[in-house]
Image (cartoon, rainbow, N blue to C red; front, top):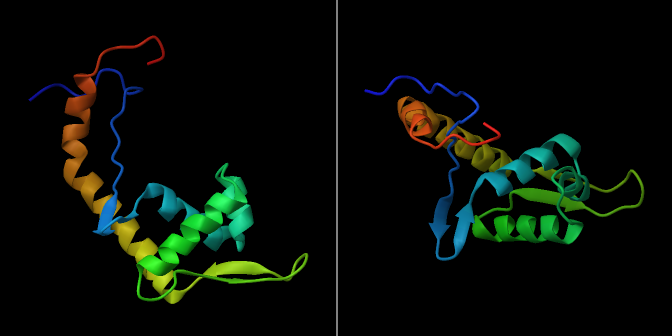
Length: 126
């Protein structure tokens, strides 16, 4: 077995993309968007926090809402301070399952991360 990564700045990380059906997927970007909606109570604010346009954030929410049997996000229109968005019960379950899958996969692969990182070339930045 190789020694632990001598350069901890060179890390290997895991990104999970779940293929849910023909042309349907759930990955880190959509999961992060769900988390931001949950935290901020707004699709627009969640998109801004992620550096994403309002249109793109809404588009992703619409895709997620139609991918599952029940919507993941509920929104209400309104003027300043009256509108908003929240995760539904299904949205919370989907997000929690996705995060558990990420955690379990990372735990299972953890030992190999250092091995792979040690095999990467050195760079000027790390």
